Image (cartoon, rainbow, N blue to C red; front, side, top):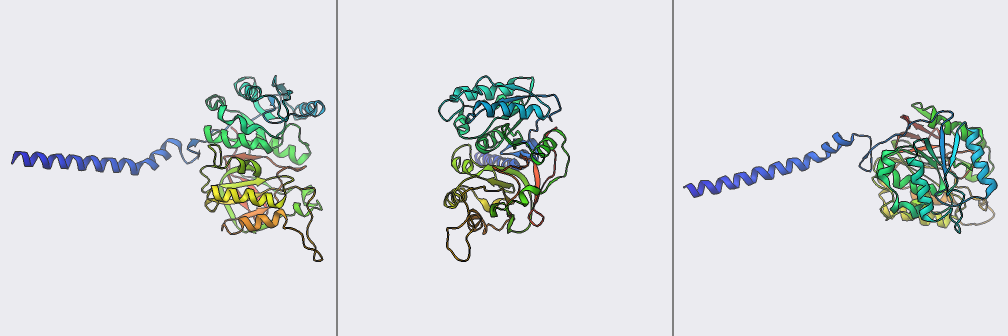
Length: 363
């Protein structure tokens, strides 16, 4: 009788442990929300950098390709013209083939800019190529301990993927230091980085709307409104990093933004196909396409047959996703572009061709 009771007790104890384990597993999602909150990015709590003020010092680095001396000097003048002091990375003027110095030199400047307490923002002089080579060696803990504004676009997309995913830091897809700082580009960048308001609605550039190229015309691919956190960048980089530890992650319910320049339609097709096959794009809340500028592109006429355009390809590869999608918003490799904070909540409205930031991106 004693042995029988002992066995029953052991079975009861095991069942109780099993139930406790199941309860713990079920509670994990709620525990994650309690720890990270709803404001999480790739499992990381959203980390917003401090806003900029006139007279602040910004660090100028070249984590990808280099620029000629005249262009570099203009980049410094651009940032000074915005009201900032400029501190130049010691390797930022270097050249190593098509790169701005060796991987070690460019990485050193990136780490320097985030560790220097005098520097309030990290501004990239240009894109080009090479930022993705740095990703495995970046000290993400250093960046997380010293959160700052990081701004740039094109090849800088590699940093905009890896850094938020590994630290939760909000970074900024916006003009590089050598960009053309016209009123539209300048005002939107300074509004986002210095004078944040929410909601903050961004409408099309008037200059872009009057551009005669058909690639500047907005087209609604799938109508509707979408709400979600912003992710994305240059399409070439998004495709190149697909399948690596640094590619798109946790995209469900987010708004993806993409842009590119001088890419033939068949190449755009290939990159979008790669994204479709490496990520569940149907789980996105929506997609905002910038302007895919291409100086060689031309629209087909009724009298001739030419290959599909970039817009035709985007329609064909993305139009069946069942989510709001628009082409032609004012960002990308273009004269007038707005700045997109990666990681914040936004609303995409295809009917009105607007993107609205629903929260400030800096504190």
